[in-house]
View 1 (cartoon, rainbow, N blue to C red):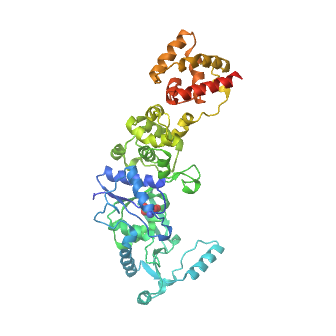
View 2: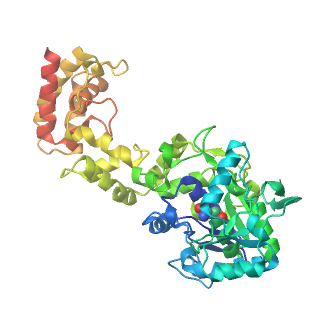
View 3: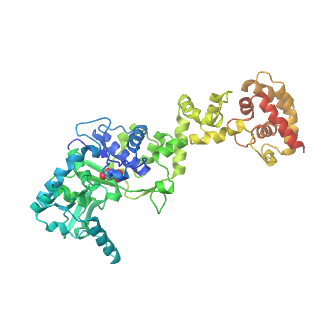
Amino acid sequence: MPQVRTRFAPSPTGYLHLGGLRTALYAYLFARKNGGVFILRIEDTDQEREVAGAEEQLRKSLKLAGLTYDEGPDVGGSYGPYVQSERKGSYAPYAWALVEKGAAYPCFCTKGRLDQARTEAEREGRTFKYDKRCMSIAKNEARRRVESGEKHVIRQNMPTDGAASFDDALFGHIEIDTAQLDDMVLMKADGFPTYNFANVVDDHLMGITHVMRGTEYLSSTPKYNLLYEAFGWDKPVYIHLPLVMADATRKLSKRYGDPSFEDLLNEGYLPEAVVNYIALLGWNPGDDREFFTLGELEQSFSLDGLSKSPSIFDKAKLTWMNGEYIRRLPFGRYYELAKPWLEKALPDWGRDPKRLAELLHGRAEVLNRIPEMAAFIKAMPEYGLELYTHKKMKSDPAVARESLAFVEPILRAVEDWTEASLHDSLMPAITASGRKNGAVLWPLRVAISGLTSTPGGATEIAYLLGKTETLRRITAARERLAL
Ligand code: GLU
């Protein structure tokens, strides 16, 4: 078998969506697993759809995902350039070679004529198909008109009967009736090839052995195969990947606010968690293992595990997985990632961000939850007195009133405001007084955080708040409870 060469061929029309990320990932994994080469090719022949900066963003995203490409726009390679607009001049000779073989022809029909035919088809409830009118123009006449600068496109001459087919590694034999095929445009009037033509020419010229792309191309691939046949080129192995859906009825889409890879990273998902999650969305490792590093995926990936049915993106599952990834991070790395989020919640908070991060590590499943979890430090949230009621802790507002009266002077007397000395002053005093720990610590925590669930317990929070703020909050709580 020749060396495996796969490619990811995005159009620079926006952010990397999750379906695209998964296609890129599988193409990458398949190349790595087989000691092959993974290529990035930018398909920008539809200049109208191009979005400024999108190519750079795509490259950045692939790097963040760890999908290193061996050949591509910024890394070079012996089959470049890897941006189709930079190869613009290379497609026409191939199109003309097809014209010579009778597999394509120049078409001079005006937009007006085509629009009219389209409207007619619509009115009659037919799908529009070009009527091959320009096929009847003699070849040398057509050439003369082209050479004199007449506006034209080049169309693929589809067979009018029989079937066109191809074999897909996942979906098997796919066949369509050629009578359905429109003579699609290969070269546009602006001199650019269409995607339909450029992908075939480039996959051939770049020696691509395995083409992986979404199932939305399943019905176009028979047309591409006709092109391979007309050229007499070897066909690649096709692997069409089922869609990634938002739910049972629609595919993931930016239009409905579904997140792109970049959106997820901005929300505080870790790229390695997203990659792990996405890998399993349509591929089954054969056992119930769920956690894979990219390196492990490179070892384990195989086409056998690919699913034919669409998969549904489940953000809750991703969030759970991300939480696991965050918990497993060494603290130093976690702190680096958490710091900007903490600074957002507590600008200029100089007390002990590291300790706070330690207490938050493992609690926030996604980094963007950090600000809301830390916000009570900056501002005491409003809370209802029912928070003081906790059956197991043997606490209620009356108990709380008494407990806070008991605890306030103890805390006021603490000079060295550290977690250890807070603990050492509080705990023996509670025991000596015959009170239950919960009946004191629960109300204390509610009084100084306004919450029933916090990173750390009462002493950790008191420490983080500092002495003045802790006592201020206790006084305020006692005033409320006294009413
Ligand atoms: N440029 C196409 C897209 O972005 C790529 C399809 C293919 O991989 O052939 O959908």
